Every structure is written in C-alpha cells, then in structure tokens.
Image (cartoon, rainbow, N blue to C red; front, side, top):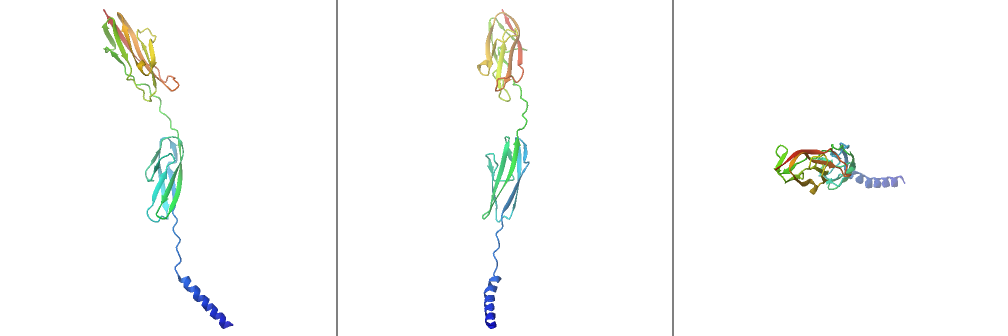
Amino acid sequence: MARSLRILLACLLAAVVPACNQDQPTAAPVLTATCEARPSSGTAPLAVSFQLSLSGAVGAATVAISYGDGQSGSNPDTPHTYASAGSYTAAFTVSTPTQTARCSAAVTVTEGSKPANQPPIPVFKTTPFDVALKITGKAPFTVSFNMCQTSDPEGDELYFEMDFDGDGSFDFKGITGFHCRADHTYALGTYTDVKNCVYDRDAQHVALHDDICRKYTVIATP
C-alpha cells in the first residue's frame, strides 16, 4: 500500500513540476491619461492650455480633442480660446496601436466686461465747400449738406439732424440712409448757426451720445 502511494505521488510530481517551470504570461500594461485645464475659469475670450499626462503607453500615441464648444484638435500643447461665456468639457481620447484611454477637463467661461460704447466718427461735407466754416454764393444758391461718410465704431444706428436757417430748430432729420444728405436753397442774406448734427442710437432707438454738430455761416450775396 505504501509503495503504491509513493508511486502515485511521484506521478503527480512529474506532471506538475514541468508546468510550474514554464514562463507565466505577463499582464498587458494599462494606458492611463489625466488632463488639466490651465486656467480652468476666466472671462471671455479665454485662452486655455491643457496639460495631458500619460502612463503605460505602448507605442506612439495619438490624441483626439473635443473642446466642448464645437471645435476639435489633435495637439494638446496648442492653447484653445473659448470665445463666449459658458460651461465646457474638453474631452481627450488617447490611442496607441493596442490601447485607448480617455480623460476630461472642465472649463468655465464668464462674460467679460464690455468696453464703453464709442460715439460716432462724424464726417461733414458741403457743396460748395466751406472755407473756415463759411459758405458763400450768389443768391439764390443751393448748398448740399452731406454726412453720409459718418461711421460708428460699434455699428450703431445713426440719426441725422439739420438746421438750415440757424433758428435753433431742426428742419430736416432722419436715420441712416438718404437722410444723411439734404439740399437747401438760400435767398439773399446771411445765415449764422446753420447746423448739421449726428448721434447714435441703440437697438431700442435710445440715444447713446449727445449730438455731434458742426455750425456754418451761409452768405448769399446779390
């Protein structure tokens, strides 16, 4: 009986030992990715750089980036600018020939302070040309007043006013378009404080700045 048991144990050892001596398989490395936004918050427009860190990569890695604002990229070292306010998630997908890993970074962008509204840039022209703000002609003669080249830095609506006889009351007024020019015929006499003015208005047609004016003296000679 003892001899049979020894034979059995010997057989078992012969079967197990060779298997134990074989090389055991090595677990494949796991690719991990971490990403960070710098800065992660600020006012628009906000330029953000991203720090991407990898470990366990086997072979060359490629990166696909979705910045969360409809834009995409492939180079994490290139800063990205968020143009408008909002909460964004920049998502990174890292791939090697045999591995994939993902990470994300949150970015919060707030509305930046807007610069103060600028007044119009007026351009006053007359035909005949004024000389030292005096326009002279033989009565009756017609003067053309033109402010059509006036512009506004923000593109606000422009409003024009003209006082042809200098009595302090505007005789002609209107918005951008043909209202930026007008003709007036002068009878014999001297007309002081002839005035052309322009101001800008917002979307609700509220004046944003006071009138910007130029005054002329029109002299209609015999």
